Image: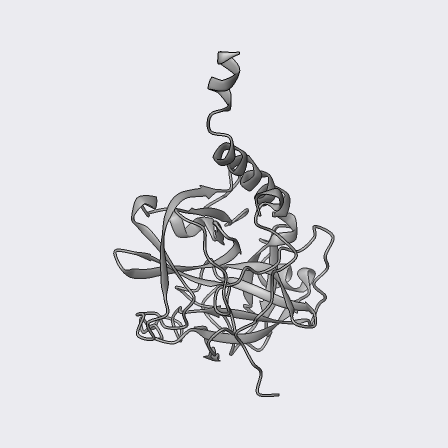
Length: 273
């Protein structure tokens, strides 16, 4: 596993989900339907979503960690239940939060963070990594992708759902979205939703996945829930961190920390020679 940084060919599948043939405007997710979804909690309270990309690595939004203490963050995986009522949640401590060095908290550019887990996840029917796209991967306009999270069910509403919510949204043309947001988008952003509103991510969904099925049965991470004006408002679609533009940093950063994990005693060995 170490030879491929935990990013092996097996990713993006849903082995625990059998198709019978919160997201605003969403529906309850079935068990195993979004096996890469993570709930990040501080003091047992959900504050953001996250996405599994390797056995020790999660992605989330950098803006989720402006006021958190990494030592107090726990990741809950393998469950659709926010409060663990289904008894399937696996809880793992987060040992490191690495925000993108170019993260801009004002315009939310480079809104991505890597989280290192205290111990490797054991992948199962209900715990799976999503695939990272190649830098050249295109997510075509109109492509339907899945957003998911335990965020507010409507704008300004503090009620969070107990069951993970998911919804299908369409990728929106970059120029159109940039126009709708007064030209405040950067290349590190991608928009998804509907121009008429009604379905969108909301507060508490931040850091969660925008996942697209690019080949049958295999999901790729197109974006991370980042920002938007309101929730599900017409002409104000959700804005996501565009993974294809951030992937090089993600892989470089992980391989940097991977090598320090696997070779902890190299310097002393050399000095002994």
